[in-house]
Image (cartoon, rainbow, N blue to C red; front, top):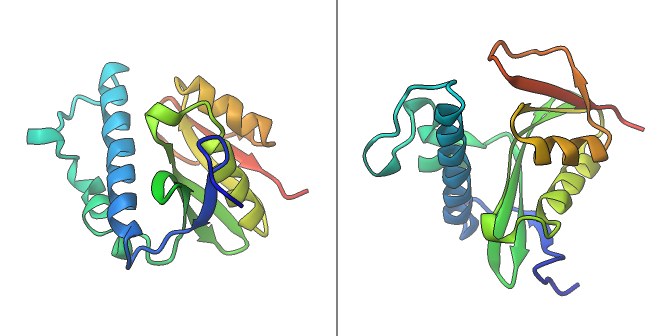
Length: 168
């Protein structure tokens, strides 16, 4: 299948190869955006460091995705050889948790996030869970459209919505 901007190829990331740099950049952009939103929403007063450096607890994901995602499934959305999205899934026994889902901002609304989410769900043998900030209305709608339902929180952070999709 030929990829186009509306129908990317979803594939397993080769973190030891060229995808390591692309996944690092994508996750870094996702985390910087999240931190900026948290400051805007009054959840965090922790400033980004010089030149957008992330808080220490996120650094490993950007600095060394091979080690940070050693036991995780990492899928990328590829268009014409360029990584335009990523999903990171942590296996949890028979369950799984989506830890990161990101699509290039310039290509949002073109099905890239949907394709990544669908691939992550298809690869899970059991229930799959995720958490999302309450202000991310578009993301929440996407999750709900794929069968995710809000459940009581397993995370103590205010404004974080926890969702689960049961296996059919």
